[in-house]
Picture 1 (cartoon, rainbow, N blue to C red):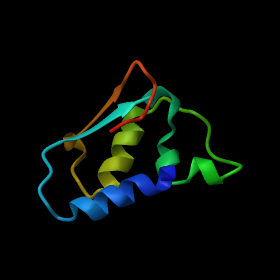
Picture 2: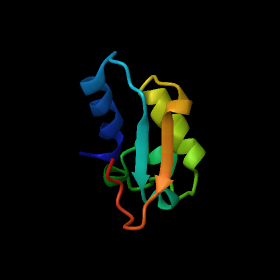
Picture 3: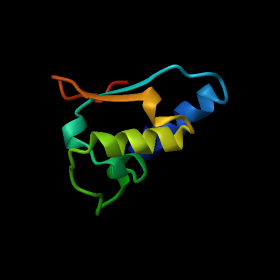
Picture 4: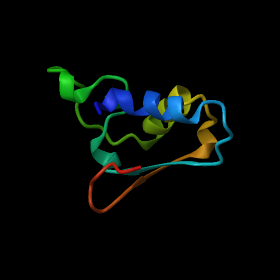
Length: 83
């Protein structure tokens, strides 16, 4: 799945069901929030890395139509975005 397809796929699965918490864990310091809007894998001019957990939180909450207070963003040691 390309980076810009992740959130729309989650939204399609969840729909309007109640969501208590969204946990974004991974190499947060190396992701740019724009990576979730523009497929890094398909773009030759993708935005560079940016340590912006609040920006990631904003994109996730906006795309999933959820309150930002329900989104937690945390760095993990292994560096893999896995949730």
